[in-house]
Length: 176
Image 1: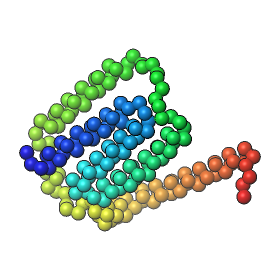
Image 2: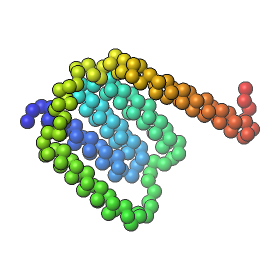
Image 3: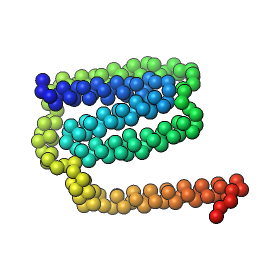
């Protein structure tokens, strides 16, 4: 067993355990913290694969910005503790079936041998995930979708501001 395989199995175990901790925890704050740990584990996977830019983006965007937003919403709504609800009768059998399908797929991928991944891995260039490679790919081949996304995000931001101002005005708030 080489070092890369050991690191992969350790990271995989940590990722699975943090995902299970997120799913099984009744406290929403602890679930969010488990999710942050899972995002950090995925970022370490990216580092091991030689993609440091994507790893830092993973930490900054997901573990940083989005999870802080989730935690603010959880704290503001006061929804830290999960309330007891009755389970639907179809949930347990479908969860067992889906878990068996996932285990079968994992068994197939692990023990079926080479699925052509080594050919793909040898074709990848050394700087495939560098910021300059990502930027040149983005602005050379995906410039129009990038610009359309930027315009849509700008329109959504302006729309949210207009709706917020309209709601404030109808409630009698003073706008200056």
